[in-house]
Image (tube, rainbow over the protein chains, first blue to last red):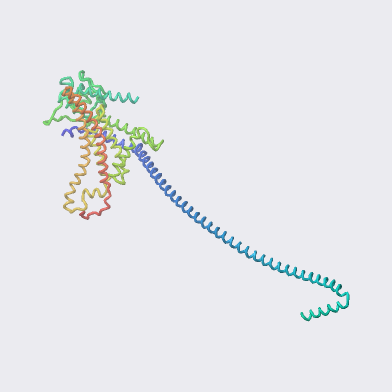
Length: 165
Length: 366
């Protein structure tokens, strides 16, 4: 066998020595730090991706929240507007009612006062008319009753009138 | 600066390619002292390239027999003679014997043998050398290759690790390395091993890049053939084997020695098959990587050799084109083999640590 004949124990010995030393040297100074760096980097990338995903989700949540808040605000605004409208209407109607009542009141008061004034005026007028009538009557009487005959005549007539009344 | 260094690499590539024809094998040099230009010489040259070497040669001068490169340190252990270290230059490319304490050593076809004072080599009837061999712990070209690859890997990945300190995203060479690390983690370790993958990441990553970079170094004109060496692939597969056996849980051993869910006669039949399976898996790992890388080197060098052997104006450029094409495929294979080795290692580890709690034992699966 040429292969067995060619086998060099020395070369085998050196190979094992060199390779084993190389494995241990590389393990300490190369493979460990390299693989650790690779792992760290991959972990970092994974973390970054995860956190980006999380941020995206959070963003979406925030957006949804915003939308919800907006919706709520809109609803609230609508409700408030509605209420205001209602209040306005109510106030107007209340005011109108009140005004109507007040107006009625004023009118009524005015009417009574007018009535009173009217009464007073009529009374006054009546008194004055009476006064005047008396004065006129006095004057007429004075005039007419200058003579006795005329006086009797008047008394008769007046008495007649009284009877009639 | 970068452009010049790249140019010089290309220059070196073409220089080496052209010198393949003039470079000289140890054996052939004695016979004709000329160029590698016959089929047999090309074959010998390829064999020589596939082997490990005690020299780091860039090229050789065919005419003078001079080699340009560095002799590497030789370390041998002889049971009779003890441990010795000396420079490979003492062998003078196999021409000289080295004498230590009265024992003679000869470099013959890239291997060191114990010889008598004359340096005679004896063969058995099958053509194998009978001489005794000391255990060769030399820092050979392949060991240099492995150390070079380790230094490169260490530098590359510590710089990647450092770059994370400044910034979470790496710059420069890390830009290229980081996806590969993630690839090994996400495509090899995680799906095959499951939740316990972290414990095995150091092994998988190191083995993946170690094999890949050595495969790629084999593609350079420096001529390393580390991953195409059976001792190397054996070592790699052995580490996988040991890791798999040590991480095997109760279920894993139960499935090997007393397969749940089958009748007792089947349990007895399955036991030796499963035990054999424990060894065939890493064995397949060893052979696969070895055969693929060796085949790649053989194909590329054969195509280059054909240019020389054909000596023909049409075949030359055609085979040069083929070589480029195969080289591109080999670049892919370099990655693929590293990937397959790591993937299968992960798969075997996954089988050993798998949790079988989801189906109850000893209930026949219908």
